[in-house]
Image (cartoon, rainbow, N blue to C red):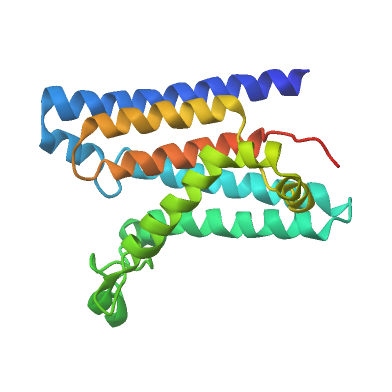
Length: 222
């Protein structure tokens, strides 16, 4: 019972913090000025660091789940949470360019030549004139996230094969409160209507996925 109360309190606190961040972005963008908004979402700024931290926290939860499930001898569960731990750790590192600016590390010649921001990260690479960020980290991820947030619960409910597959791999699914928070935060960010508003989308994804990993939706086992 105490654990449930702690999780519920954490969800309320994280959700409130997220909406405050986005609400402040709205305030800056519409009532203060564009320059102030861009300063808010700048590199190594007030939005980027919480994004990286919550991606890292999500990775830590995935590591915890991995070791939690080891004793159950469920290799596919371990595969899912091992991959999630790696992906979210990687995303956290990419978000802050692996601490390059913090430690004053110079980019190698490869990244100076092929990275559009001359930083040591993969998501800003330009290969053959094509931005990796737009191709993979924007378009592909946008499609995956739309399917995940909009259709995953419905597919699990209506399609037995999908439900068995989700159960077999122990894929974490969002609860209703996570879907509501993601929907509200997305609409609020879209109301800003300025360049670099995507930084607040990234913050939303990081914080909501943290909550999903912390308290995933449970589906009936077949």
